Amino acid sequence: MSAVVADYSCDQPLIFLDRSWLKTFWNDTLVDGILLFLDKNIDLAEIRKEIYDRLSTRHQIFVYSAKDIRKEVTRAIDQMFLLVHFLEVMALVVAIIGIFNTLWSEVLDRGREISLLLMIGMLSSQLRRCFAIEASLLGIAGAVLGIAGGLATSYYLIRQMVPIIVGWSLPYTIDWTGILRFCGLIFIVTILTGYVASYITTRKVVVGD
Image 1: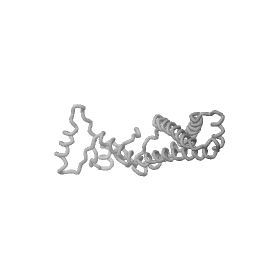
Image 2 (image 1 turned 90 degrees about the horizontal axis):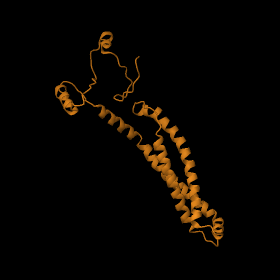
Image 3 (image 1 turned 180 degrees about the horizontal axis):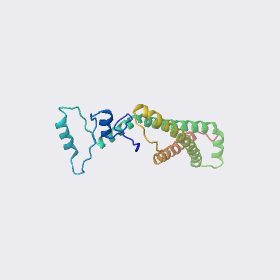
């Protein structure tokens, strides 16, 4: 064995042998695939048309370029992870609702304490800033747990589900840039959610309560 390569043009494992071996040991002279390397100056559309014109009447043939195969692979992977992207949006919505409800109930439960802080001179903006910081800490904790769970889930999807669904074995790589970008979005959203929740609820707190 000379090498092991990833070939996404087929969803089944293949063994590449020299054609002379097939003829000698298995008496197999059939051909089911031909790999062509074209010069950059050659028009792929013209070559494809010429192949179809010459051979399509006698054989059932398909001509795919490397770009076509990559496009098909990308489409299949995107379609498979469409549910994952939907779950990302749902997780963000659930996080917003959860933080909003948590801070809302907390502000209502601490109404007398908040009233006392306002009476002794604490500004409403300072109080809202405190709740915004608390919301950001909740967001950071959720992001850390989400990253751990997401990495475990994605590893299972790539290593176990993808080979079963599409028949391909994909390399497992971690997009830290995307993870940090999404965590930054979560952080900003949680701060804004905490600030809005505290702003709405603190307006309802009566100083003389």
